[in-house]
Length: 119
Image 1 (spheres, one colour):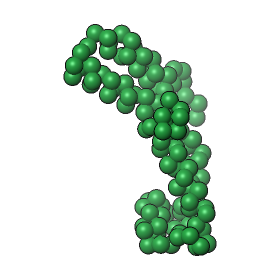
Image 2 (cartoon, rainbow, N blue to C red):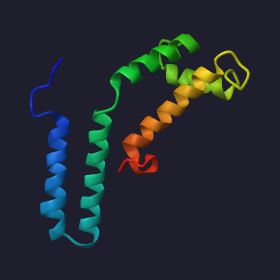
Image 3 (cartoon, rainbow, N blue to C red):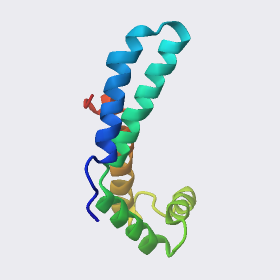
């Protein structure tokens, strides 16, 4: 479904800019820290809204296929990993490792893009 303009991510970016450019310069101490924390949360929410939903859905389907768990396949996958089901040499080790690597990259891109050199 197409969203009506302005989209939430644009609204968040506009509000964040106003907070940083117009309000933050007037604050000091704890209030300035709080405003920066709010601005960071807004940036994280914007990046999260822009995440690749198709990859998330495909990965959920893959986890369901691998674990047989219709509900909470992420938890089932984590339990299987802890149990050694996808250790090196196992049938699906490379597939699970690729999922975990991509998930870590996506999480970093949302919460800590500087780690990936993107921010």
